[in-house]
Length: 532
Image (cartoon, rainbow, N blue to C red; front, side, top):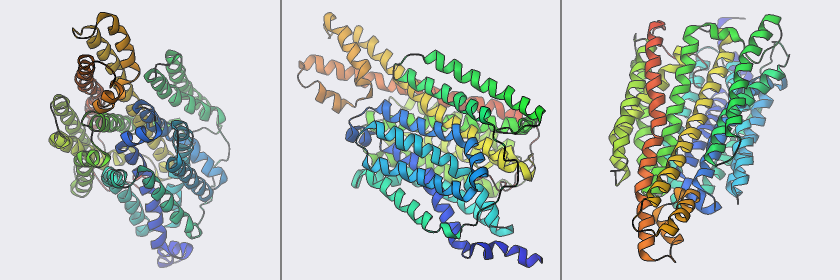
């Protein structure tokens, strides 16, 4: 075969390579924009479904958890049933979740269909999409498609809050998910353009490894969510999750020594650069998840912003992240990725440090502009280089497996950040409400304990307007005092919750010094798997 025929082989295989590339980018756009829609629509979803902020926040964290817990399994399932089939099933799973959101009448439907089925769909879709891009395009065409799909993800992250805010405010949050279904239907209409990519590796299944990975990540995040909701057996879930992850490490090494199929190759972690890279990836996502759950709650439940106002207030974070990621990717030059990563974590840390004292004083969302731009710029630097740093020492034949592990670490970090920051927020609210109610000079002593209990269960997730409606039958002095407690307690809780992303960013900054010492490679265009 001549060099020219090789270069155009993918064109003949797909028939319409340009259209196929656009459809793949559309699929990635839906995946990334989905969570943004939920974040800026929290108050609307709470109101329409008659649920609580903590319940919606738990659903958001659970969706990220399911995606993380099953992504390694989803990659193997794609190997066994075919990447094209896994791609279709993943899209259908995501469409099922979006459809359920459009029709949902309760939080249960959101959890079952959007968080669980949609999360499983994402775990099948992401690795399958990577393999299909690799198998349907070659040479420069392949690089361009990877860049296009990565750009679609970046654009979705940037415009998601604005798009979701506009649709939710002026139309309906349900319509946003209907549009997701329409996009997925358009992507599926072009499935005939996709050439399946045969798998030639081992078809053995590591069922024990798969189970341990799900139990490990699931136990830790579910333990946090159960604690948030005041449930029992929290310690048992956390210990079981940690034990399962430890057991997974020993199991993978044992399988490797026995020459048996393993969920992932433990030899990947022999590379110090890879270990440090996925640690940085996880910490970056913890920071992002913590910020992206605390700020929407603040904007919608404290400032009582609608979805459009919340989206506009969050735009400095997402847009600066998008712009800086593009500029850093082009202007990095000979700078080592580890150096850029260190600056990224430093800016995120500075941004959150500045943000924390502003929270109780800001009367409008744009008061957060400066710290959000600083933090967003830091996140942009991280997005531009973390994947490149992590995957640089990995050989081409192992990039797919390494990228899947990297994605799983990032998704787990995101779910952990969402869950832990949300749990800390609500726990601090509960403690603060109780303390302020019991020390109040206005509330009668006989009513203080009762008020504290009511606040723990309900007012912690209420805006002042909702609380005033609930207390309409109370004496004015009692009503005003409870609203005052609500007003004073929430900023404190939000400040404490922001310590979660701050801690993650600071640990990432400390880890970046080890990354520099590990002497990462010169900055360059990300490897093919980077957009995923």
